[in-house]
Image 1 (cartoon, one colour):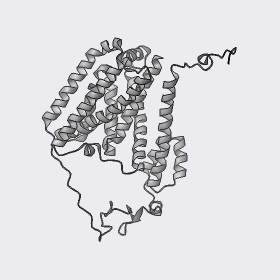
Image 2: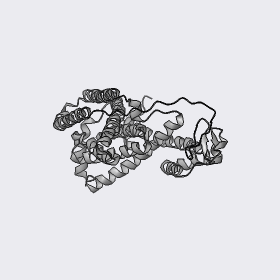
Image 3: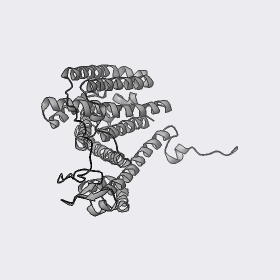
Image 4: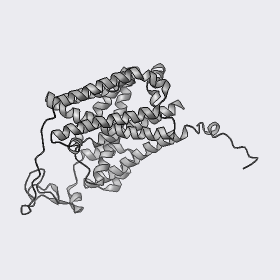
Length: 352
């Protein structure tokens, strides 16, 4: 209105207009993750024959605790049978999916008269090690190149070029992995761990990814504190080291989110999928392979400095552990995307 002077909002509320969209986006992501966990806990409770409302109320207070409690508790047999999607095994009494042919506990046949097509045997042709050596060489050269060029990137501020080039690079690596899998008779779907068969599967993976991500952040925070990275000088150095990557406008924020999703998919396929499989075959132990792959993941981020490479290796270990326990890359892909998205937005918020 003419003649009326409105007070500056930053003076009243202590926030600036320039930083508000990013802060609002970060809050939206956190609230969405929380509510997504609550919904996932409700669906997970139903899948175990438990009362949805009771568990949703618990999840509103603490989704991680509710999810872990449900994971520990055994399924409610009567509750599952009441849904109509399960039947009681006549031999052991275990709830069995109505469409299943055998009981997972006693392995007795449930529908002896029904014929079921035989599934093809899983292809186990090994991918040649020269294929792995080529990927490792490319990663080493790219990491060394990034360590040398990060200083130049600080002044160029060519964010769009950096984002697009990185996305092309990661999709080319994923294409090379796909080519190797096809030559050996495998597929990306097998490497990832199949696909979602229901909304419930998606929500469970989403809840696992959010909870595991929060747990990984606490582990990284403790490691950073132990390495003395909580001091003001070290925090400033870290911001200078990786601050050049932070998006600065709406277009760059959009491209950053696309880059985060690309990294979440491609890097999980490469490290927790392909390299984990290859090093497990080479070393004969998946846990030794997990340690090696986690170190490789940290070394692949040379532009972030030595200390942050250690933290990234720990984050890779958390993602790998999640993938091994879930037998799927999907939760790690979602957690990785969430981690990269929020990290970039936080960097921008700190700069403004």
